[in-house]
Amino acid sequence: MIAGQSPRWTWTENPDGKKRTIEEAKEIARMHGVHIPDDVDFFEDDELPDYMTARGPKVTKPAGSIVFWSDLVNTITGKVPFLVRPDILKSDEAIVAVFGHEMYELEALRGILKKGKTPIEHFIGHTSPGIPGNFHEEAWDYADDLVERMRKGGKK
Image 1 (cartoon, rainbow, N blue to C red):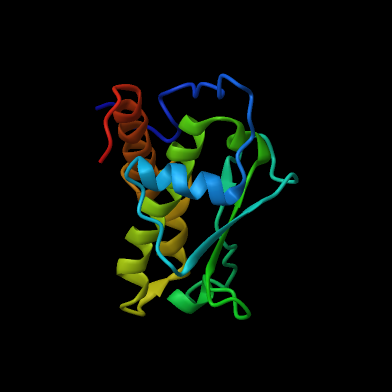
Image 2 (cartoon, rainbow, N blue to C red):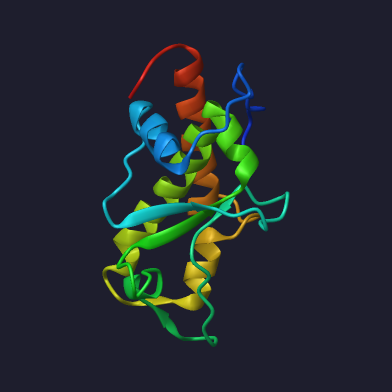
């Protein structure tokens, strides 16, 4: 497998051009092996820049601060919100890849944040593009594998 900081595949748009709802997208992702925990939700956001397929919660803290799981959770809904660019919803492959990428990264973060001793610098290092071997890179490898299986007609 080729590791990368972005997806290997160019995602195919749905043949009928149909744009999925967030609920349909979550079901499609689940059908193709993406585990979406109950404490996560997705929202369409037409203001995300072209270089960003989706985005989890922004965590901004001073240097040396500790990041906790609660920093990711919306205080009103009790869920971790993810914003998704609208064009992602026009491709089932993109849905599976992007939702899979975000859930992989989130679950990796969950493991370290639940311990409660993660400095902001480590959090940034795990989630930023351009850092070889971090959670962000691993998540794209996972996403690529999901799309490859999807194209071969397989499910997780």
